[in-house]
Length: 276
Image (cartoon, rainbow, N blue to C red; front, side):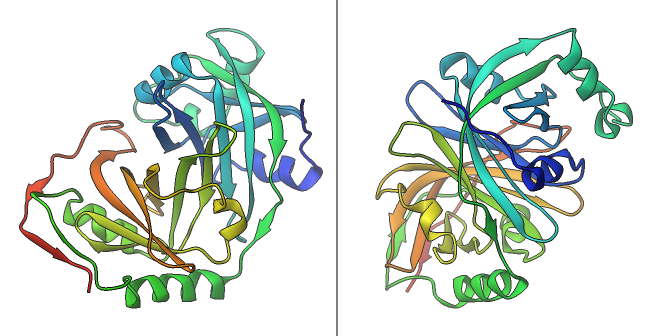
């Protein structure tokens, strides 16, 4: 089964500065989500992207072909697209299209290794957020950290810089999890905020319908990219705090932007985390 991009989705995905994210999973179903700005439509049923410093993603694609792509424009419009990875090509039309883009032509690090393609299988309902949705969601996450939940841990997973970036309101934040069909599903959740060095909290509204398959104790990945652009990815376990609020208890943090893509950020020692 395939689905087709309509005109609005097609044009949005062509935008070279539109934040786009690719979610993959390993053989155990653990999700991974990173910004892949080179994602673009080849035609109405196919997405292509450049393989640029994406070792973990490439390894996951060898283990599972099911993927998802999500994006959100400057006007807060977007969707989640599920598909099957078709493979990489070093030469050919896909590689030529990606290499001709401004991101690769003027990149200070290197060119692409090859170009990947994704055959679209289905597309979510599009979403259209407002600036008030983003503002109030972030404020709610900052003010409501869940019912008196106390946790003792040995390490602070997020470096203060990572916490700062996840705390920004002008930033794009995405959560990825394995949905009920077995796909790694990526969803923009702009209300994500740090509640502690090992905890992120977020409001389910207005993205609740897109998070319906997110279950208690599921493995989750979250990614943030800022205007600099600087990106980080964290991983952990989902906790359902209330009908309106969720949390991710973290155990790993990684760089997700050049030149340190995929490098784990070694956590620091800590003592008590108090979410009461």
